[in-house]
Image 1 (cartoon, rainbow, N blue to C red):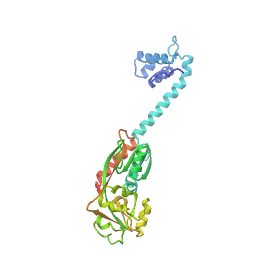
Image 2: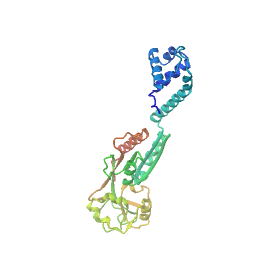
Image 3: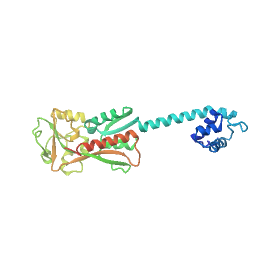
Image 4: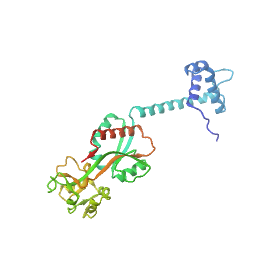
Amino acid sequence: MRPLPELSVSHYRHFLLVAELGSFRAAAARAFRSQPALSLSIREMEQRLGQPLFEPTQRGTLTRFGQDCLPLARELVDHHDRVAGALCGLASSGAGSLAMASVASAATHWLPELVAVYRERYPAVSLRLFDDNSEGVERMVLAGEVELGVCSPVSRDRRLTFEPLLRDAFGLVCHRGHPLAGRKSVTWREIADLPLVGTIAHRQLAGYPQAAFMLDRQVFVSNMMSLLAMLERGVGVTVLARLGVPPDSPGLAFVPLSRPRIERELGIARLAGRSLSPPAARMEEMLREKARRGSRSVA
């Protein structure tokens, strides 16, 4: 099989103009090119195809080969123009698709308002949002399943870039009837002997000696909704970052932990050295703007 000829869209456009107008001079004027330049374009096309497109003695008259090429050339140029128009639409009109992932706490309590505004601004964008823990969010970004992740930096993988957005403080979460529920703050020492319900989020505290007692727990719950339901029934207490607690929960209280105050960092994870799609770039800027408008620290 012979190699495909290297022909540009301009070659095909010039061919179509000459064929439709029946004149090299008229085609050159329509294309805003000089006649010698347009004639050179047609000669290049004929040389690369290996067959004449126009009769040498009747300028502007198609050969049999040229007649066979005409509908194919027209189809190619029409397809090119449709694709180019669609690409321009993606770049300028807000169309396209976006897949992103977030830790469940941010997806539940920090992102809904932002997603609502995003959908209002860019209704043509197909948006998919997944929630997972920070390790899972980073895995999805690395696998190319999502473009953006809102999480804590856990792997320090060099294939990822991380842009901090806010800091979220940890606190005691308990039933509102608990003796500590009305306190302005409690220390880690004060909760060391309480019946603690463990959760996967406690991995973030593994490096803090003040929280070492949390490794010795009687109950472990992996699902956040199940955990909150147990706490509302008074089944123990737990430690969560502030965004992990529903702000409108009538049965739960969040009491900031002190001495020391421990925070997790939340931010944007994305692949290093990769350009974002227009929908993802818009979402990234909206995340930054939301962080700038609000407090950088959630207590």
